[in-house]
Structure formats: structure tokens, C-alpha cells
Amino acid sequence: MPMEPIQDFSQLISRLRSLKARTRVAVVCPNDAHTEYVITRSLREGFADFLLVADTPHLLNSEYIRQQYPEHVRVYEATDPDKAAQEAVALVREGHADVLMKGIINTDNLLRAVLNKERGLLPRGNVLSHITVAQIPTYNKLLFFSDAAVIPRPTLEQFEAMLRYDLAVCRRMGIPAPRVALVHCTEKVNEKFPHTLDYVTLKERAATGAYGDVYLDGPMDVKTACDAHSGEVKGISSPVVGHADVLLFPNIESGNTFYKTVSLFGDANMAGMLMGTVAPVVVPSRADSGNSKYYSLALACVAAPQIESL
Image (cartoon, rainbow, N blue to C red; front, side, top):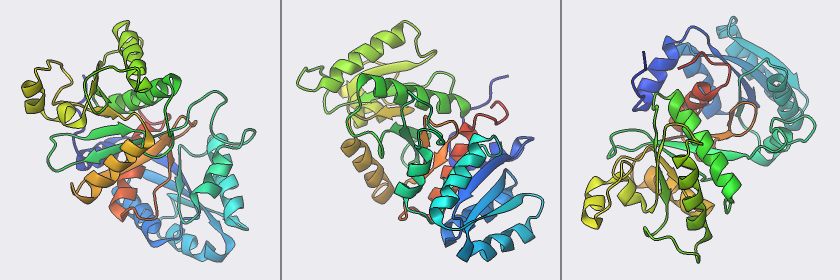
């Protein structure tokens, strides 16, 4: 029997708690206050086990967490943050962890280990992309969007990878036929904006069933995608208009600006992760709240390949 779509983060946590198996999370340098909050809250909720890879100066902090939850926490010592990143990546590669999460380590240092061609987590030929999920008070469901953090100017191949990642996570969240808006400033295809030509190709491929059950439309602006009245005024009839589950942005500037705007002025709760790697990678910003980091981990737990089917 199909599951009901997960429409907010509280439902996401409830769903994770209902699963029989916990997701195994490797955390690199887990000893800042926000990361420790995420770990202890997830342990209390009972949906994750943790492999904490701490550099030597912070080992006691991790040991303290392990002593509180001895059955669900293991601690590994590394001499420095770079070694911690390498050890955590190895734990994922070797099948001991399902998710990788960044703690108090520079993102560049972590990604150096993740993207290592011989010992990293990105298979040759895969596209690395970032998925964000926003819970916006004025929207009636979760809104997925890409790419706000990784890909500057997506090529057609990158657009297709972004789309496939978003669709896969949507379906894990109980959305069997996601509604995807291809975002642009107008509804017109124009060769001056090459991404709109890529949009045409994506729609043609979707029509052949290349992406499974999906409603894919655009170009359209964000308001049209998420507000049915705007579509009515413009005379646009589409299953996507006013009901988008996913927004694909044409470049990193627009995606990142949307991210910052809805979180700051729209009071949205946010979650995000990297996809394309063999396991989801949670790389929160230093400016993200504890809640955002917690929901990001929960999102990654849903996307983890080893998790029980949702």
C-alpha cells in the first residue's frame, strides 16, 4: 500500500522512527555544539547510530556521548581533521556507514576526501549536486530545489542528474509522481538563455518515460510554479502550476538566492545534502541552525541506499 506523502519535517522524523533499522552515520569532527545537538537529538529519537571520527584534541567529547549511548555510538580517533575525513570516508566506502556528515571541519577539507579519485565517494562519471528541501510556512508541502551550492551553470547532463536525484528523494518521501518546475524568469524558450533549450530536451525525454512518473513543465517562474492564481492570470494550464514539488534552477546564483531568501524572510526550515556520491553527504554551513542540521541529517537518512524501502 503506497505511503502518504511526507509533507513536513515532523512527519519525516515520525517516519524514520517507525523503521525497524537505524541508519548508520559517520560524522567527521563531531565536536561543535550544533553537531553534538544533532547527534544527541537523533539518538533520543532513535533513528540513527553514529560512528564519530574525532581528532585527538576533541576525543573526550565524543567519548562522553558514547558513554551515554554505548550501544549506538562508536568512536574513532584521528590525529587531525584531514585524517578524520579520510577515516570517515573509508567507513562509508567499506559499508560500515550509510551517511557521511560534516562536523567542525572546513568543507574544502572534507570534500577533498569525498572527491578523491581513488579513495573517495563519487563514482567515476557521476555528477555531484546539492538538494535542498524547504518547509515554508506559506506553502502546503515540502519544496525541493537544486542546485544552490555546487553546480555553477548546469549543462544538460547536469540538469538531468539533478532531476534524477530530486525525483529519487521525492519518491522516498512518498511522492510517486513529483511535479517539477523548470525555473526561468519568463515562460518563453529563448536561445539567448541556453538553459531554456535544455528544458525543452528534458521535457521531450520526460514524455518518453525516461524519468518515470513525473509532471515536468517550464520554463516558468517560481511564483507561477507555486501559486495557482499566478498561472490562472497568465493563462497557463499545467499540473505543475501552483503545485510544484521540485524547482530546478538555471544557475547557482538563483538557487542560492532563493535558499537564503526563503530562510531569512520566509522563516523556512531548511534541509540539504549532496547527492551523486555512493551515500548522501551532509555538509551544513556554519551559519545553519541546529534545527537545519538536524533536518538535513534526517533527509539524508531517508535518501540512504541501505534504508528500508519507504
